[in-house]
Length: 293
Length: 273
Image 1 (cartoon, rainbow over the protein chains, first blue to last red):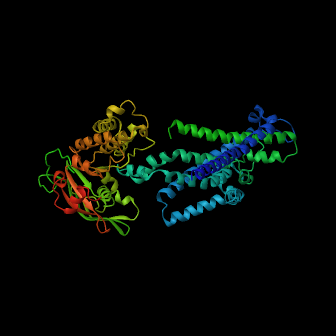
Image 2: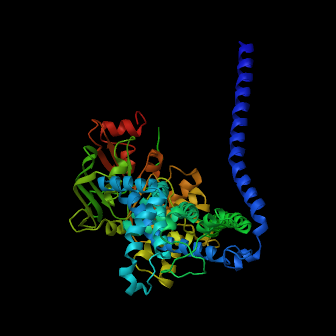
Image 3: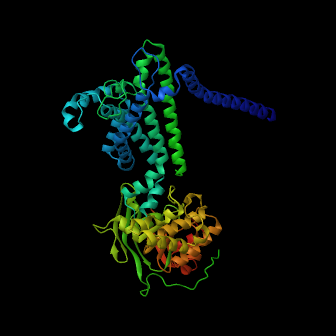
């Protein structure tokens, strides 16, 4: 009996150490690609990674030097536009799904939001092209611009990609707020909408912020939906109703271009893009931590 | 088993001299097709601590949640019969549940301060909603913390997160938050079941203090607590699975020494439940 027990214990210990080892290996395995990508980007992009990249605009094609200032500014503008247009709708949708969506209509909307999340980004680009880009002429009296391809259209495309990500994460995070917290508020005579805005949303804010950062990271790297909405621009422009450059578009153009400096700058731009996303997510977390969220 | 009843007998709620605060009249509360409580008629006097006791599942909490319309927060829940608070039918058409809850406050089983707010903001939430600002809001909040016996413990850290407090302090904070709204009635749903004996003792003293200005209704599993801390005890029982009914109600010292119903006697002497 005792011998069997000892053998069993040895066997359990062996299995335990194998399982632990496998989990650690999996954890390391996840980090390896990230470190490899960052290292590779730095290694290949380093030749072009100097101040000019941030302070100079693209020069004439084929001439060495220049930078991607226009693309960095463009990506920031596009991100800003997509946040302004996408976040209010996305968060409102998430609130609806979590707090009011236990109905048939809620079920249908949740399903459609999931479908939207699965729509390829190039399709969203075509949709915005048909709906917005081709109709910009009719808006020229309002926008004061005769341009068809605009940062505005690009922002709409990116907002549509953000929408399902942010609304579903908002829903999930609101559902994590315990019912007793809502009841504490109701019991004070606080109406439901006020409970949502003053108690439930703040309690879920750090999770929602993570979702927003995730969505920004996702759209910051999108080239496809911008190809025929924002178009890209060889000149520095931050106008909302003009074509605008963006890092993914610049990377696409340079990576497929014939010149060595273009390849270097494509690598360096990729590194900058990854760093922007990283800074965004770390910055977002720091701000929330300071608020105690 | 002897239960320690120290206070002089206090009149049962049927005593005409005592002002009624809450009246439940033929109250049946439904969850879908199932009744949580059935046909309850209960008078709750002002300035009195009323304990509701009974075995698990007898509908104590459901009855409590009908008094501030928290019952209807659960989907498919509804109520038949009437509940009067200070004479007003809280289920009459046109009555807003939010208004009812400002008059009938509630303290929950587990302390539930708002997790993202400071101690100070927690106390002020309700009063702020009702329009108090500036010095008025400060006065209300400070008074509520003092009455809840928490002021001296938290006066130097009012701006720190409420969830950093101990469980007992959090529960007293929830009581402060509740009385800051100025309710007529304070409902307590097993307020001490998650607390240590010292915190329990503090809360029981606090209940006595609160009953000077409010009607206090407490649901408790702890019969010793009901015996030592309440004036009136109501015993509930669900015998046929068709919803809890009120078996007996009377002055606590009588209920715990000479109950008139055999089922009450069996329960308070620990023979079941």
